Amino acid sequence: MDVKNKLRPNDLAIVFDSLSQPRINAYKRYFGSHLSDDEVYNCYLWNDAISKALFNVITQIEITLRNRTHVSLSSQLYHSQKRVVTRCSGNPRNWNTSNTNTIGTTSSCNWYEAGLLENKSLSKIHTTTHHYRSKTPLQGRVRPSPDDVVSSLHFGFWSSLIDKNPLVQWGNVLAHIFPKHRASNSNQWNVATQQKRLTYRLELVRDIRNRIAHHEPLWKTPKILDETPPAQGSNRAVLHPPSSTPTESIQRLRIIYSKITELLRWMSQELYDDLVASATHTHFLWLCSTRGLDFYIKHHEIASSHIKSCKFKRELGSIIKMKKSVFLVHGKRSISALHPI
Image (cartoon, rainbow, N blue to C red; front, side, top):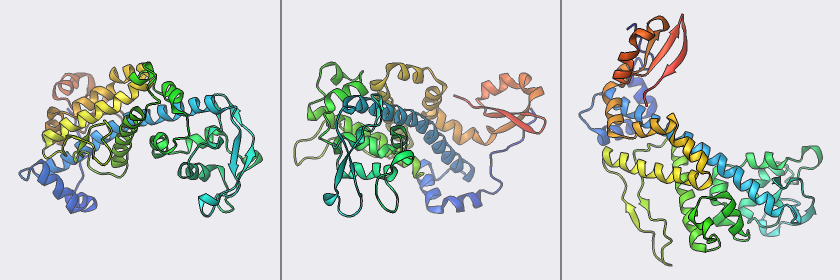
């Protein structure tokens, strides 16, 4: 096979220096001091692959949660009187409001101006709805549409919306957002315990999302806590302590993945079924396994290769057998990438 290694760095010392030696040393201590520099780098690539695969799933959940919440709150609050903060500067306790009109439709309106959101949530809305300097509402043609406002809000807003805004009547809203959750079938969303359980699940997704966004190693899995709200003055029970070995990291990450994907199933059985049937799901489960980690450690140095299109058919059996990642080349141009799942 005409192979040219592409993704391996020319000088690992330079790469390790750019990543910081303390970070690389943490990989050596955790995955094994006996590993070569190449193998330590492969552990880094494995963590990167896990992060990318998991982030793809979280992104789908984030978009689905945002859109379902927006539609549900728009429907419930479309006919409510809307009020806008006339100047969002200084102490929020001193903010004044004035009546404003409802804009949009019953499936996409300015529900966030129905006077039910706490100031912290409102402040995030104001970064889009108000002038940056004057802190006054944008009016007329420059007034952002509800879709523009909603799309500007980060996952942190949506994951804390339920817990931070008790004035919203969450019962019917949550039943619409999470139709496949058992609480939706038993009309229990008005129970504070059920809302708190959901908040804990959303916080887990948010924390994992932030770890990926901040380039924190996912193999450093935190303790996994029980979602049953504790008694007043008590802490949540620990179901699984922080991981201390690669095997424990894999086990914890699979538990976390199961909890994250269950959140998607609560919102849409169809989207969940599509995910489970997808290459994204299969690839993550392969990556997040002892076999996947061992493959990265031992074989990734030969995995990222180029093969000419004229030789691809002849070498396909070898590629499948060895679970190689290859770039298919036509002339001087890479035209396709194939990765094991």
